[in-house]
Image (cartoon, rainbow, N blue to C red; front, side):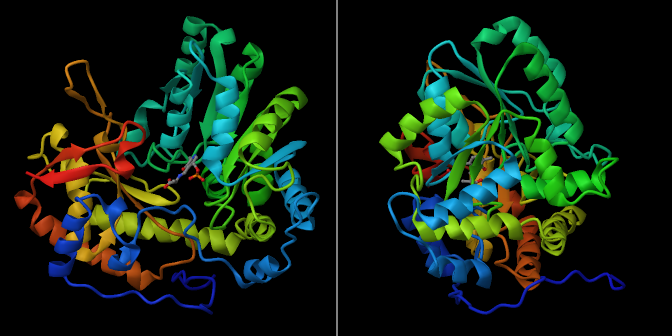
Length: 458
Ligand code: F0G
């Protein structure tokens, strides 16, 4: 294009009002939610950056396809359309529909896991890790060393450390490694992309050692954008072709359709191996539903089938990645410490650096999450010691490797002025940063405690 302004490549046909609140009201709401934004009512939130999952605005084509949803229990036309679409995209012969990504994780990793088994990933997402650990297996993260640093010359900070992969295989024995999981983009590692070069190396190592290689592909279109624009040799390929090339390297994939399938619910597991697919199909039928719907309504399957095509549209992807970068670049220029360059779906702020006065056991990330809500009505999530912290035998916190706060951007939902508002709120965050104090957990559950924990201000 001749002009540099990148506008949202869509018109808005249906709107959802935002209820404007005051700081005073938000203080009350947050107290009522025990300082955990997961416990807020969405109506009390101005800009909801909690997640990009299931929050996409669907297109007119998706909404109209939903009306043709076939709700037959078995052999629905909606399923045949979805199956054909996933098959064409991934190339895998066995496709199992699930109600969302973690259901596919529970089926596959539940089957492969168990005591003594090891899973290795660039970074396991929290539900991935939880599903693995629930079987008493071990989940090991080996992101590349530069993953969390502000370095502009490293375009693929989501890559897996392949030297470490080989050394783990040697130490643990390939027979004990249940699977290697490449998460693209690497969500918990800053939403950073994974290069095709890295995927090829991981694939070769897995093949040589006869280890199952799975791609967690929920943001594969966004990852393909980075490959085409940053990695040598991909300029002439379409985003879809690049994704297909990556799928071809692996033995299967797990997808949460709530991200790059532009749908509000859904997921699937796709596999090459017939025997493994059979074992997983048994679990699918017991826990999700019959093989031609999994946990989904026919209309949802149609929305996913269309979303999986729309997401590879070059204008959409360019707008998507540039609008995330727009937020990141503005915050960076204000001096907010964040993972740079920005990833695909979210901005990750280093809260420990922003609030050096707050010790890790007082959760600097949660403090920033609370400040963003009170100052601006912005909801986001801590990805630090609240999410990943553990306790030692004496009950002392073993902190997470990083204290990040994620601002995730829903797809096709907010316009540039919403993002400009978020950027402006950060001026207030900077102005008041010395006054901010940490929090104490007063109630928590064992699994994924960040969802339900209660906090008290210190
Ligand atoms: N894998 C990755 C990389 C994810 O980001 C998610 C979900 C899942 C698996 C699980 O999928 O939610 O459909 O069960 N991520 C959401 C997030 C929740 O906010 O990042 P799900």
